[in-house]
Image 1 (cartoon, rainbow, N blue to C red):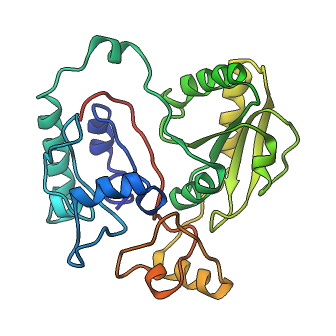
Image 2: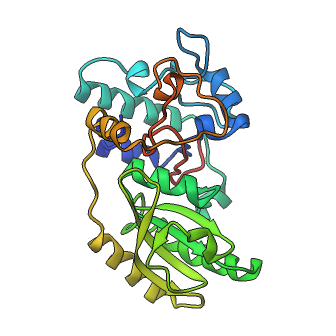
Length: 276
């Protein structure tokens, strides 16, 4: 799905007028209940993936819901992408963005904890940015610096984000030297561990942080993963992921007693916008 529809340049352009949320599926009971109201498969249960374009209040479906964009926009891939782009432009034209939303940056799509963030980063083949600060004031300053860079042309869509209150939360990350600051991390194949690509201390200048981001992207080497070989390797290595709530997708490995870590089963991403 990500390599066909969601990586299409036209759809990326159109998405700037939307709030794009990748919900947590089986990692949040509240979000799972919301998703199950949008779409249920033949099993009558919430399945691993759900796609829909919703109204700004999150109540009305503006396209057909399903497991992927292909359910809403069927047909040959290139034409389906153009149909989706056209529909997104048409939907966006119905809504007027508030002036204050246009003049300020949106919040970062921060994941709830490092464990899940590593998994999502591995799923998306993106480096993870972890902001670590013990005090609320220091964290606010870090978030402001990271946020300004995250939505810049050079870095938008290039990272996964998470906050942490202490470096001890990065125990699965190799190469951590600082106790506070910003760490850019390369996840391992299955999102269980990671290694530091770059790190800067608390109080660093925005210019130095920008250079750290750029250097990390130059160092990062994403893996090309195919679902069947990846899952097979997970079974061989006995790599497992314990979800927060039971997996109800009848085709998912967890329903057969096994759930491989690193699959795109959970997490959230965001994209700049203030519309549906």
